[in-house]
Length: 538
Figure 1 (cartoon, helix red, strand yellow):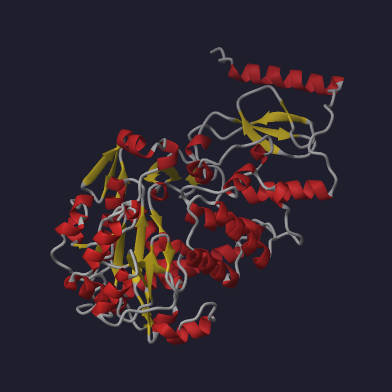
Figure 2 (cartoon, rainbow, N blue to C red):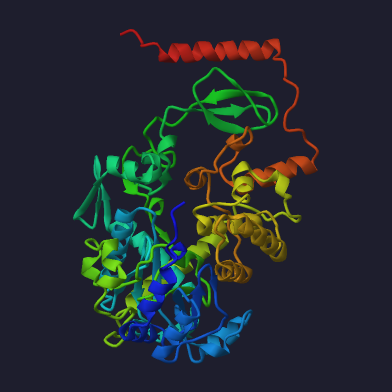
């Protein structure tokens, strides 16, 4: 494991020297105006709520060995009136506004820069002029739009109260916009914003992902998404006894995993055709989620981010603000404390116009409303009356619950959806996730976990976790057992097993001996298929 900067015996002296600079104190104070602030002391955070009122406050905290400063995306009329566990109404009454902060988290440096660049471009395409970017201090970037760029009203609702749903909707909308408009796929290359080209080989080398993890295929006619592995010569087998079906390599027959009956191969759609409309025209699109992870998906009230010009404990670098035009040329070396001589503002709303963000907000909220309507009308999973016990969870979920080194925020999103779909109550789910977080080598900050659980408690719709397999393969937890072949979603696995257990139906039954009639039918079927394959004589 790489040594942390704060493990350096001289780190605290260097931090104190940095925060003693008057220009640094003033830059941090300006960034924290009307915001909740929490100093970090090594691995832990100070009490909340707190705030900065004078430049000397920065040095005062540094003398008490504060290593960095973190502030809220929300702006408050009085940050010190905030209280833990406050109601939605209490928070709305105190909230004066909020900034859009896209926390771009990507473990691959080249693609971290590309992602930040693409977000800047997408925002500018929607008429946003007051975009700002800062280096996070470690491996990513923060792309921001100030509160002053958004209209005060959205319809008849005060925009300041639309937190966190509005920034979350904007983040989702921008990711979709980038995928559809700013990334194109050619035979051997992926082109970002028409100018930045990266070969598949480079992508595979850097990310360790194959083409099925980097590309998705869509039918040009009906826009249905098709997994690349599904467009193959696999046969569809159907059980004549229980109706169970599955895909497998060509064979005369298979044994049904559900009832041990005989599964016969069925006529399948011609390879290379859309299974929905039969079209043979497909287009490949880059799977942005393979590289881009945006923290706003897990955004919650009182969420904090590292302030501009604050040090980073792991790297010892400065979270420095950079020009939007310099993202692709920026290097981490540029963020060394001794190289910082100027202090441009992050989220500078002094020249912003309320009109510039109106189009973006309207488009994002409209897309979110449409998605919610579809979700309400689509009930793939009925929630069971009793919670599915943990010993019936699929292998991926059981392994995730043992703790993760990377991807904990995405895992939290999947786990909460999984628990809710499997009938777990909020208190039961919260207790289990708190236990899970303690098992992570580097636990999620409590404010992130609590904020996400608080948001889940307010959600009405219950949606399943991501489908198998790609999402779980990225975590390294996809280890299918003999039961996984029957399902497409982890929630199906748990609920199906629970139903079998409650009905006292054994998963495996003694092998069924075929009757003479069944053997004759199979022989006739093989002869028929053989004749179909033989070329007809002219």
